[in-house]
Image (cartoon, helix red, strand yellow):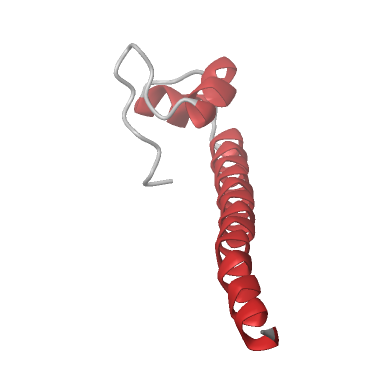
Length: 81
């Protein structure tokens, strides 16, 4: 009886472990995305106004562009930064 109870307990623990693992993966992915966006923001902030104008954004749009990968005006994705 103990063996059956132990096997049942393991079967119930497996989905819980998967959910916990999924939760931490989601948190890690969110953190990685946030770090990537901050890096893009920092790189854009380091550009001169002329360089920003060449890629089609202004200094005031840096935060918007980094958090919204493409805006309504059609600014290309910042994946290259």
